[in-house]
Length: 122
Image 1 (spheres, rainbow, N blue to C red):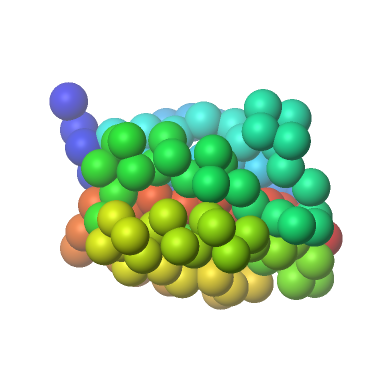
Image 2 (cartoon, rainbow, N blue to C red):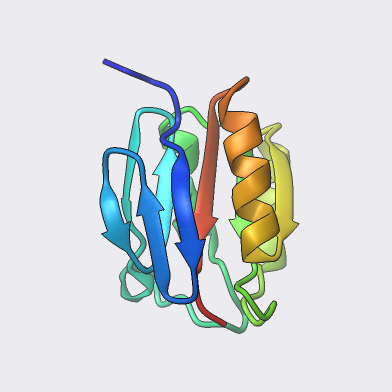
């Protein structure tokens, strides 16, 4: 099985295209694959933001670095508990505006097992 992290080939408002996964709005990506990111699974909202439960799947799939996007307008936040969980697991964490997050994720994917959460709107 291919354990490298899939690349994001396109990102624009409300649209993300991921190698091998196709097109969608928001994605969870990790070594070996990914899937659409459905905020309703964990009750995620723009504030307080990305929940620890949102990143657990990324950790479980072997991510050594994790990129969290903040949305195109930096509206999406990240819960402090989420950052604490990632640091406790010794994972490098990057929290950036979505287009910058995509660039960082794709660059990291070439060298290490990386995961990410990508929000393509606000």
